[in-house]
Image (cartoon, rainbow, N blue to C red; front, top):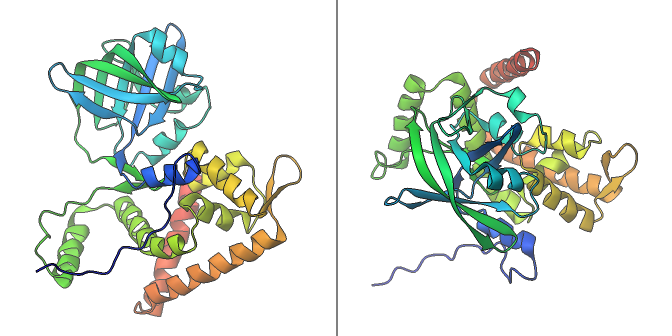
Length: 325
């Protein structure tokens, strides 16, 4: 007997040719790991965050990834003949953001060393693959680079994930597949208290709460980038560079979000390339803010007021300490 279940809500659908941004959002439903591709050709160095990396073959050992044909780093990756795949750990969001920028001086801002084939290898990643460039294949607006792995190194750690325009972490479900919801919560809390550091706890709760709010964000039909930009611009005007530093998303995601908001007449550019919300933009930002407050009220309704006040003080102190570190 077939089980009839409630249909999953459709957020958006259509032709990729008619709306490339919506198509990109659809593709972002597929979670990937996060890598930084690095290469060195003489004194010229290139590094870029990439989530198009994939294993291709074991015999021979081949991997692939893609790069935009317009990328300023393409020439270096083609002429270097060797490149490295650096697979990031779940505490390297800042490193991913660093290498997603157009800054030419990225390598001076992080630790690295030369690998066996000459390509820069980043420190504290969970895996490096040193490759020779085997072949390139045309892939529309991208070029697909196929590499033959010559040397690999695997380190202890867990991977950084990326989906729906945001970062995430992996959770092991194998041990809790058959547990009740209460047992799952108890099991997680026990494991959580025993093994996770303060930073991992903060990262996890931020990710978990954001995931719970995601349903309401989807009802508003706005992307993660749009949601964050409305929040920041509601309090002050900012440049694109300032936005990227605050919301931890790629330049591409920010560009698309700003275009969508501009199409709604919610943005205006006044002076010094600062982006402002229009009157209608501020009204919409306030509407979103009310949704957030309502959501938060439900989340904390069972938390003791004194405990909540203590938690907020601790978080505020951590913010201050982090800024002054």
